[in-house]
Structures are given as C-alpha cells and as structure tokens.
Amino acid sequence: MTIELIGLENIPIVDDSDDVSKIIKDAIDKQGCSIMHGDIILIAETLISKSEGNFIKLDELAPSDEALDLAKKANKDPKLVEAIIQQSNEVVEVGPSFIITETKQGFVCANAGIDESNVGEGLATPMPVDADKSAFKIREYLEKEFGEEIAVIITDTQGRAFRFGAIGTAIGCSGISPLWKRVGEKDLYGRELETTEIATADELAAAASLIMGQADEGLPVVLIRGFANFDDLRNVDSDISPLIMPKEFDVFRK
Image (cartoon, rainbow, N blue to C red; front, side, top):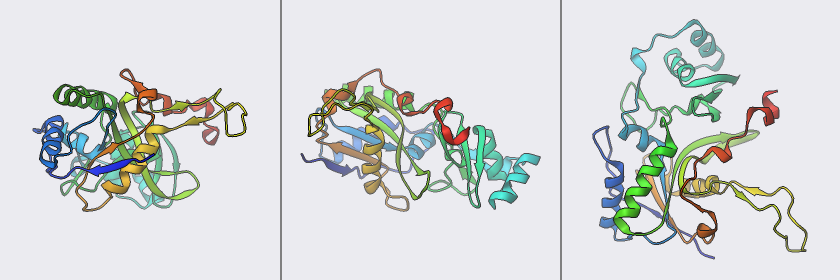
C-alpha cells in the first residue's frame, strides 16, 4: 500500500471575503494534481476560521475576575484567558502554561483551541463555529467541480494526555466516517477483535500535519491520495461526533 501526501501550493492568506472552496479548486488546477476518487482534502482550521470572519480581537476584551485568577496560575495574558473562557463550556484543569477546557464544540483541549499564530497582530482565531458544516460545503463544491467522490477533514493541532508535543487532530469531517469500528474482524491468528476502534480521521490529520507544519510553511491544505479504505468508510452523512467521548466515560474528569 502506498499513500501520497501532496501539499497544495498557491493558497493565499485569506480573509472573510474569500471563498475557501474556490481557492482550493484553483490551487489544485494550478498544481496540476487534479482530484481522483477517494482523495481526502485536509484543511487547517485557521484557514476556515479566517475565511469565515471568525476572529477574536484580544485588545477589546475586558478580563473578568475568573480570567485574572486563571491568568496568574497559567502565566498567560488575561485577555487571552478571557477569550478562552468565552470559547469554553468548562475549565477542566490549569497547568503552568496552559488551560485545558471543553470548547463550545465539545472538544477537550488546551486553551479552547484558540490560535494566535498565522494571524494579524492583536487577533486570534478560535475553532470554527461548525467545522463539520464547513467540511460538508467544501466537499460538495469540489465533488461537483471535479466529478469525483472525496472526503474533507478540518484539522487542528492539539496535545495529548501524558505525552509532550502536539499532533494534527480532526475537528470536522465530511464524506468519510471518522471512526473505523473493527469489532468482529479477525486478527492474524484468527481471533475475533472485541474492542478495536481506529480514529481514522485523526490518523489522517496527523499525517497531513507533517506537510502543513506549524510555522511559516504556508501549506494549510494537504491532499492525501491512495487511502485504501476510503470506500469502506465512505459516508456522506458523517460528522466528527463519533470521536468525541461522552463526559460520563471520561475517567480523567470524574
């Protein structure tokens, strides 16, 4: 099996007047890689938030007493902490340089997923309001333009419990099931799998992150070609919800 990762060049810096779907289509045309059946387009969440005008103007925020207290504990700018609180359902834990929260979208991650990189001075971008909806719109547009079945995954960079470093993580998807349930299949020794579930969308997001980078690479869109299980996981009604663990099963928050 061979999987190809293609970083799309010619993606400009966007603002809320830009159509990301058309920008991606034009970049594919310019690069000459076209679109094939089963291709997966992975898009950095900052590109989505910026194109949807989803900005936080940090200088306009007035920190609450809670924000001031958390800012001291986490050694962060109180205005950024206020933004974190406003973008969260719950503050889960506070560390020496981070605040773990449950975001409005239901993700548990550092700093509510707010990103201060690759955005103008004094601004920050929160997670897209509805990354699944954004992925759906882009997928429908590209499928119509190219006449091929594809998937779209919106990615973010997040840390993991008990491990240093961040990896690409899926926060929205369309066209492919994000979770591959393999219960009932057999292993190499013929034993039946009883609990195996694969976070396929996260694995694809992590692979794409190797190309996207986190600094000045300027490649916020990556095309993955050759994923052999695309047809098995094809789902036009998919969203990211199967990857989100219900709070009652989250033993670390009990």
